[in-house]
Image (cartoon, rainbow, N blue to C red; front, side):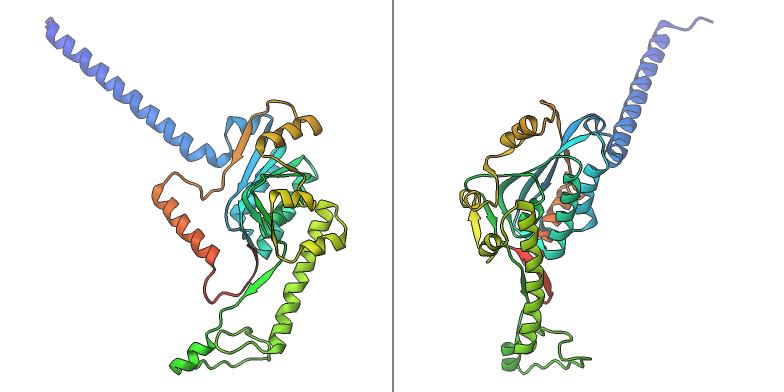
Length: 302
């Protein structure tokens, strides 16, 4: 029995629509797989051919595994011909600065490292910069602030007014000091000052060795003051006024990095297009920058 033309036409239309849906589903699966797997295993086309890696440090520096991972990717990629380190941070913890400083120092043993400073590159951020072979800053960049500080809140006066007392049983006179519930004694202050002074000496040594400056010259600059880009240049804390364009030109002309290499941005895992996660990260960043009220940390920030 012959099938009516209208029925054949309907079947053809249904089959064509079904094929469209099949193609759409396959395309969605491929796109989803690329988004979920591609970025995590470094499948970027730039990663597997010669390139300049760009790492941007624009966060409160703590030396967390997520921060170290930015530099570890540079170390582990044989296709990276140079590191362009972009700084725009007011610093962070002393340990964070030390950790990233050592990462940059290790990278500089293998490939050229050049730093560009944006609005702010102070304290621990400057610590991260000093192992680089070349440092650029803008005239209006604020940098320097070489030094260490320890912050400890004290509410002893408030406690007296409201009649609040905290009982503390200690194994030694300096255990749990400084305490927010009592004034800082000369003995406690001297002990804490020795801790601050010790790492300040480490910071000064980093600058001395990284910048090739005399020790006494660095010590004169290491009183915590900040400098503009022009002042930093006059004092030998940076090498030139400029930005990314000048940095790339230096890599090509002075370090013989091939001209026209693409730049591969290495993004931290917390940078995500998700609006809610971005908002939560901003809130967390604010808390970290201000510091928890009762937390005692050795800081290097401006």
